[in-house]
Length: 206
Image 1: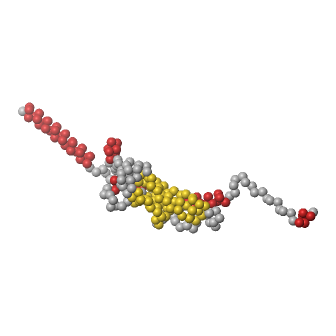
Image 2: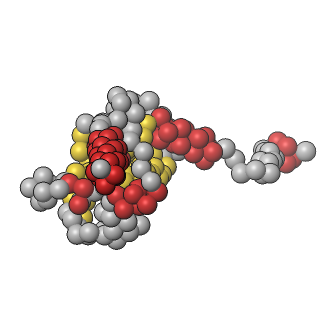
Image 3: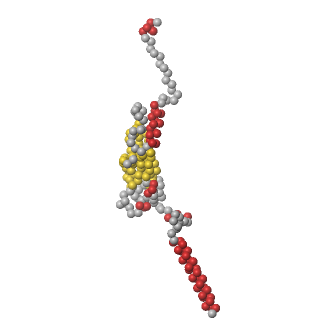
C-alpha cells in the first residue's frame, strides 16, 4: 500500500511538471499583445541580423561649374550629383540602377553590379540654372532593381526604405545668388583712385 501511494505521488509530480512545461511553451509561442514588439535576447538579435548589402542614397550634391556675372539674373552652370553607398555588411552580387531626377523628369542613370562594403555609385547631370526662373522644386536620387533578377529582395538590399533622397532647389538658388554677388564686388582693400584729366590747349598755353 505504501508503494502504491509513493508511485501515485511521483506520477502526480510528473504530471504537474509536464503541465508547467506546456504552459511555458504556449506563452513563448503566443503572439505579443497589439502594439508590443517581442523581446529578444542580445544573442538572438545578433543571429537574426541580416548579412546583406544595403544600398543607400546618401547625398544630392550641388556644385557650381561656371558663373555668368553679366547675366541680367543670377545664373550659373551647375552639376547635380546623386551619390549612393553600400552601408550594409556584405557585397553580395546584385544589379541595379541609380537614377537622378529633376522633379519628375529623369536626368541620368548609372547601372551598377556588385558594390563592395562602403563602395559608392554616382550619377551626375550638368545644366544652366537661372535663379527665379528655372522650373523645379527638388532633385532626387533613387535606387531601382529589376524584380526578375532576384527572388528574395533582402538578398539584394537589407532596407528598401532608404533608396530615395530629395534635396530642395532652394539650396541651389542660394548658392548661385551668393556667388554672383561675391563676384560683382571689388576685391577687398582695393580702392580705385580718380585719374587726372588731360590739359587742353588753352590750359597748356597758360
